[in-house]
Length: 310
Image (cartoon, rainbow, N blue to C red; front, side):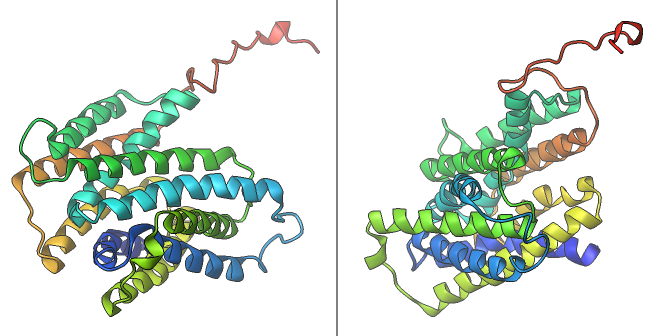
């Protein structure tokens, strides 16, 4: 269990470094298209022959859901992240992506009415303060604000796609669902890459190819397999700790491998985001009566037992 946990800590934290190396020579959408098409095909080839093949077929509803799911997670989130990492350092990008649990909890509350403990609301405030301090909209910070905002938008779309997947008609087998979403997202990425004229701008350097290979094999296949296994073998609260360990790993690796500067502003903002995520993850594990949301109305009070029709 701990080997799998350390794997997603290090692997998913290191993908920001690999992505920074990739986009030096390869266009962002094209590189992400290659990653997800190859990883999705590998997942489907391995997972489709296994499990409930008769009761879990892929039809039109699953393909449509796969394009929505893959579009939100891989085109809009990973695509925007790759585009932004052309100008935003890997460590800063990881801190911004680390806000995903904040957006997920907020969307879950607003849309589906999932109530949270008071400590989670404190986490919201602290997290947004950290994001604002990192973006530094009124100061003279060194972070590219447009790129940073694009990454925050990508974190929001990842959260929306994750919540969408809970009720979407995706395949029931997790690896089949992930493979289908990855293939569909890769198709969308390739289409937008071609439309943007990226295909003629690629420089197929050895560093870029090795970095893409790392993203495919280590980031997508090994990392995701370890994550799926952990979801079944470990408490969810323990698995969720990756959300605030990955940014720390990415900042450390960015400093050690890419020579990225670690400023006091980054440390303060990053600490606020990591603590806010920890508060939200901890509070999300507690059972609280659902409230009212955009897609959920408060259920009427149950009738007393004596008045219930027999």
